[in-house]
Image 1 (cartoon, rainbow, N blue to C red):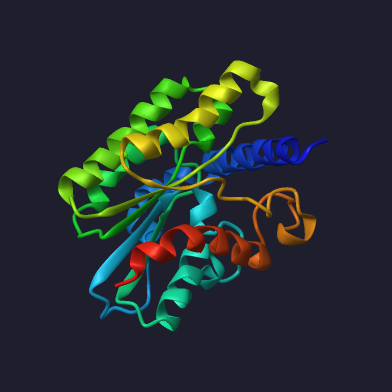
Image 2: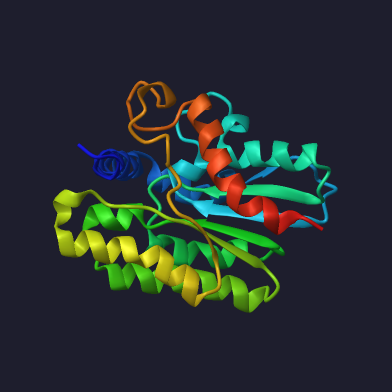
Length: 230
C-alpha cells in the first residue's frame, strides 16, 4: 500500500470521526459559539491570525487546549517576538456550508492572516466538489472583501480512493485550484507525516496526540512563517 493511499485511507477515518463527533456535540457547540473561539495569549499583539476549521483545528481530545497546533504556532511566534496573536476558531464537525455561515460573525474583528481548514466533512458526505469549492471560495471572498490586505492560507485535504477515481481527483483539485484563484498560500496536506502514524495519534487512532500536534504545527509553520516576517 503506497504512502498516498495510506494517507487517504487514514483521512477517511479522520473525516468519519469528525462527522460522528458533530452528531453528538454540534448543537451544543453552535449554541456556544463564544466558547469555540479561543484567543491564544499575547493580548497586546497588534495583528491577528485566525485559524478557521473543524476539530482538527479545535484540538479535539487534547487534555490541554494549549497543545493544539494553533497554540503551538503562537509559541513559535512569541519566540521570534513577532507582533501577532492567534485565534483558534475550530469547531468540531464543521462543513464548508456551515463555515460559510459562521465566518460573518468572526469577521467583526480585524484579521491579518486567515488560515482556512475545511472541506473534509463535505468529502465524507459526498458533497459535489463544485459545491465545496463554491462554499470555500465564498468564505475566502468574505474575508478578503472585509480585509483586503489580509494574507490568505489554505490547508489542503484529501478523500479516500474508494470514493471513486473521479470524485477523488475532483476533490483533490479543489485546494490547489482555489489557492491559485484566490492568491492563497497552500499547505499541501495538513496531516502530512501524522496520518497513519500510530504514536502520533490518540487511542482512537484518529486525532493527533500532543506529539502529533507538534508535527501538524510544523507543517503549518512552514507555510505561514514567511508571511509573518517584517
